[in-house]
Length: 397
Image (tube, rainbow, N blue to C red; front, side, top):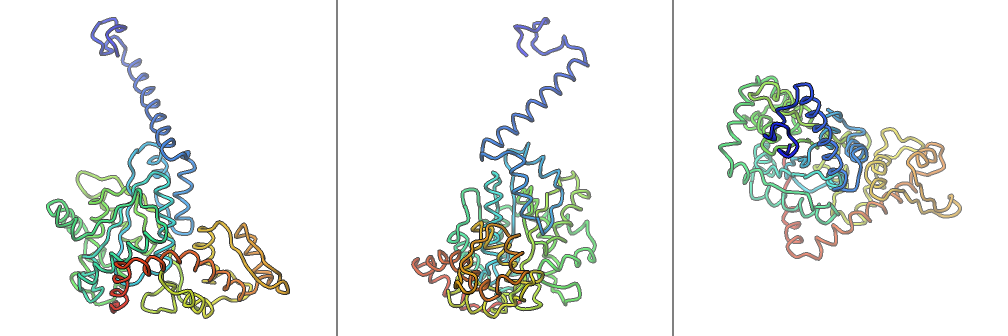
């Protein structure tokens, strides 16, 4: 307030009554909120509603916890951080490679800064690559190379190795881990063992019991506003939200955007397995390997529920291309491009699209998506040597 118009000459608004001052403060807060919203929309050329729907689409078949908080964040917070952590534990399958690139690109398009926590120490704790940290680091580097090659927009993406970041800020990280450990009993921590691909009934090492406390701490250590991991990580994300009520001072609860887990290609496989090469397509598989794996894949005629081939189309190739194209002989119905999943579902369930034609079209789509990855590992000498080392490592559970 300027002294030029303030009757007292002090410029502090002291001439206003309490009621008038409160009204002005509310008016200013509302104006500031509108300005922040406008700034957020102008940054990426999308409205808050558009950004909200795009972010939420990541969890359409997964889980979104705190939708209202997500919307408020998109309206008011200028710098939003999302995070995902991954154990470098072997070759990357298409769900981790392509689906993650799609999800990250959705968030960064909305102006979100994405932090990848390259969890090398966690992989060592979980005995991946036999606990050999050098091999684990090689696998981490390989995974980053895959994402770069497949088309992840890296303008707002940061890759952080856990060992390096924790060592550089040990005085901040370990007290947080210890506080989380103190505020939870062993039974609650054991319930989180699923995040490591383990069961509560498994014989866990002390390192694996410590692991959930560390992963919970990562969320706050990285200052994440959004946890964008798979639904298999739900228990530790909820542990973090519970901790926000227990710690002093209290912390803001993170929004949880959990994507679904993709099934394996063979009948009855609820999840892809790196240890079973026929259950998944890997990001640098050859063109023929992709065709062979899909030819063997479970694809019951006329049935889309529990059909892994259909799910690959729905969650990977269709979002990537915006359509699904089938090429076939005129006698079998001729070529057809599906502009919607509903149209594809209707044809397949009615028997107008044969599983063999669907599989061939899916193989062609996947090969198109991952061809840049093959090219990168073939033409870049460093990447080629890296892949050769990673392929030579034995994955351990």
